Length: 339
Image (cartoon, rainbow, N blue to C red; front, side, top):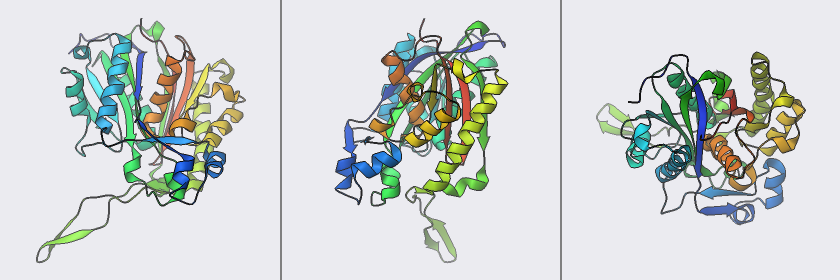
């Protein structure tokens, strides 16, 4: 375990990484399977294509690649990592995929576990990891967001199959002095009373084991979503939680360098930007190329913008995740990058 830092430590965001499947499925290709077309999908969602994990890939392999890229950007040795959090709702192993990732990355000193909060998962995991660092428990953490929703989509249902794709993104955090604080504030919320709007439920199938005794057979139904309700939830709650966060941190929206939201629907991104009178050009979006990759969308977009130079050291970013649960949250972060 790394040397225990001061309990008054700040947290710096120092490295990013991502990985996406090689298979790409365009709207036109999807239209040859279900009753849809490119115009219908793009005008309603902003999505043009999505990536699907192929026969020679796994979600774990994408996580390892994304994590390794983030570690390399940070200039760390894997043995120096104290904590690995994997945000996912679709692990390769239902008992958790984080331990396998820990082993494959060579991060032998890190405790590793999965955290499930669907599309809010990465943001929830980022905040969770930061608390371990801030309270002095750990010095370095790797947070990975990844999902393979292509496995749980009904590919004959055009309401849902057009939306989702697979991918992984990662972020590295380390303790620093408070003058370089990377997480300036956060807000997290859950409303389980609205959970039936978006779910991936276990199949209700039982088999007889002995006379008078039965057991439930494992397996899950395809993703079920009330699209209209989820859309109304997002355009109402995301601006509200961001507004609360910005007020509590005394941040004027015009001082933000970027807004980075969960990549679910371009209309949602545009609506939030309009609410804060922020130019659409300052709202990061790669939804067109990847679709909704659930817990991966925020770190995947962050890494892309860091790599192409849009996000620079010192940039102030308001980020928000939202999705099944229903759960949602926001964080105000400052990107530092590697020293």
